[in-house]
Length: 300
Image 1 (tube, rainbow, N blue to C red):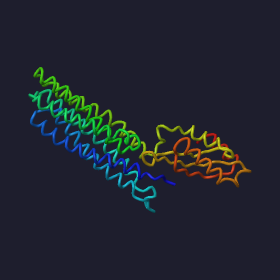
Image 2 (tube, rainbow, N blue to C red):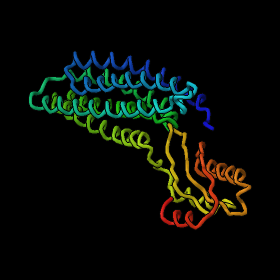
Image 3 (tube, rainbow, N blue to C red):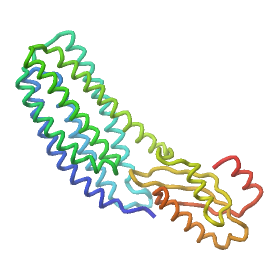
Image 4 (spheres, rainbow, N blue to C red):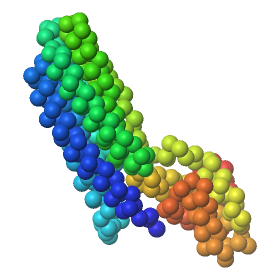
């Protein structure tokens, strides 16, 4: 039976709506300031925040889809929409980072005078907004890969704002504008670093890999520890969506315990939930035979 994710989903959505409003304001302010102040770093940061606006919008949509009931054609509902959104967010971040680095390298070859005072003032406003968004999403991002994608965007924006502030301070006190594209390159590298983990995790979920924090052998050992279970094989564990894990496999039972199979399976499911947080358990019972013993010795 699937757990009800609607409560954390609605809480996450409220946070995302607030983050969307803040990010939209930051985009307008930083883009205008970057254009008037001739700052590639500030323009890059506004472009990055614009991807946040798109990412947050997609995240809100997928959270709503995720709350829709499952059907005969979509037996797990739309939970995977969240993972697709996370993959798109991560991939978009990487593309934006590469564009930022490319433009910064061009700017290094043809330096442009930056209006340091204007850029500094707007970067400080951007930092305040990014810190607010980051704090808002920090806790929610721990339970949702979708929100985590937006959270990583916000973290990247915060670091970007700090880099812009530092470069603009240098411009104000020294008149040197070369640090502006260097800050933009740093922003691009940091964005790519954050995006890699998001793309990796979402890809692993779509490939139905075993969750990183779970060990298959440890799970098998826990199943075998239940009285009446002699072995387990063909064991599979995967993630349906953030915080929702599923397991399937075959368990062999003592010959004299086969009549109590349903009770044993219930005990196994309870133990898996308590020990590993696995909610959706599907196990097929088998009577212990020589063939099963040989099979379990070679595979889980």
